[in-house]
Length: 310
Ligand SMILES: NC(=O)C1=CN([C@@H]2O[C@H](COP(=O)(O)OP(=O)(O)OC[C@H]3O[C@@H](n4cnc5c(N)ncnc54)[C@H](O)[C@@H]3O)[C@@H](O)[C@H]2O)C=CC1
Ligand SMILES: O=C(CO)COP(=O)(O)O
Image 1 (spheres, rainbow, N blue to C red):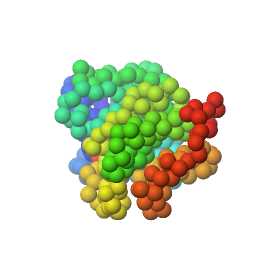
Image 2: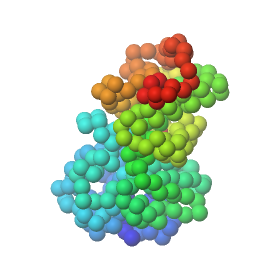
Image 3: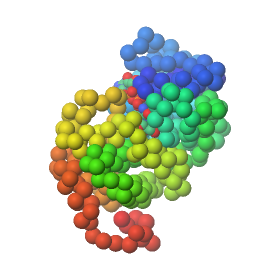
């Protein structure tokens, strides 16, 4: 099985390493490399995109112009939302290549730990079970456990939405608010993610699995997370510009928060934690005042019978 990986950043490189560890022939394409996109996608059985969200629409358009075999399985490993269409990356791939099987790969996968050979697990999700199984077999090894799942949208949204929460948790730690506050924040963020994710079409159970809660725990508890680092830096009084300038790689949560707020307004979904992250990123609130705004919210039961309520 020939694999092509698009994007040679942290995640593309880690996934390339996992496939090579299994003896899978891999071509790695980067916009800065010598391999042309045409040569990279020629005769590949599996095409995996680990390009950051901002580059996905452009790369999809280029591949459309070049032409892709309808038998190629497309794997989207990007965690983001498109600012122009508000769509997920796998949706963009599917719109452009409706004949091709689409698989989402997402889970608690800090690239650095995978590069270091530490054990981990992920999810490959597709409405076509055989496509998910083929992708599973490319990456699964005794150091990387790969689970299949039939809910690509829920899998993708879990990995995308937790980046917003990781910014909030970075703020919490940067302000040294303690373990109680951090636990409360992550726990209350979960129903928020479930509310958004199920409204947009993901299945509830998926958000409690590896690609939802699992990824939220990984990203919210590690200083390796770029999104966590964004929140942490803002809490230390840095501007967003200063934080982004010093960041190694992409923090998708910044763009995702802005897109999410447009989606939440359009769909009338209540997103109190994400709304404070949005206000912070856009200079409308200080980190301290964002905390006060969340703590001062109206008191309520922990669970409503109607999950759409916050
Ligand atoms: N780093 C990690 O631990 C993980 C990252 N991800 C996700 O994978 C995606 C990529 O993340 P990283 O590799 O960490 O980011 P990165 O910043 O290290 O690499 C991004 C890659 O996208 C490419 N790219 C950006 N714009 C492009 C364009 N217009 N055309 C072609 N290529 C373009 C860059 O050249 C680079 O190869 C993100 O959506 C991220 O959320 C998912 C799981 C783990
Ligand atoms: O998605 C990730 C871990 O699963 C990586 O998180 P960051 O993009 O915040 O580094």
